[in-house]
Length: 354
View (cartoon, rainbow, N blue to C red):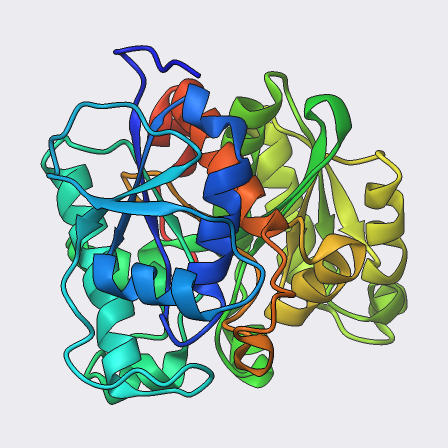
């Protein structure tokens, strides 16, 4: 296997070392064809990865080699090339949330971001972290997205999340959220036409890059049956419909508001390439039902490319040899595809959305 000298470097983090992140990274490294499209580098403790490979079941027989940030060699399936992100600084117990595990996860992301900032990497692919462990380590952020937003000097709500479910022959389904990690009552109260429009613009930009064509979007309704003409609420006419009109006026192929109980079925059958969901569970539940282990989390709104697995640390199955690398494989592939399509230009929009 050869790698072109001009291919980009893709920085991969394992997330919390107490979870399945190191396992899915090792499994994906051995299986991904993305070595042909980029130089893959894992940002982690080499000692941690050697210990994981030696002590956990079902992992490939990989060698671990520490490399410098600017090492130009190509990556190959048999040897993990690791940029040392430092030890955990304490005891990491597999399957348990600890401050050491949270600190290790955060330091790896910080190292990968430094590589982006220094021009040594073109994208970041992250494994799952544990929010309790992250907070125990002294990081007052909900997760990766906000950590990277702050590193970019932006407010937490400058970035939003798209869930990408790859399909056959370059197709797929993208779901972006107008609101995300907040109580449902707060999300509904904060919902605005501007937030929905911004989410739709970001979704259209990224899907255009991934699909290579103008995507067809739909915006979900908030209330059952789309509000039934105001009987079940007026948010559709007052908030959602004006946003849809604004997106259409911007030249985006968009429909809505469409009741969510039928929208995702229609989208899963190929009628739409992307959906703007109005709150967390409205978008997450159908995507994870349709293909949780194939889904990818893509960050929108930041001046960098970041993709991630769509699952958590799965402490309950650590070391049992059953971790599924499908989401990590898809995240690496999506990062490479976005870089090939021109980088983060399709990931940003003019105004932030939560």
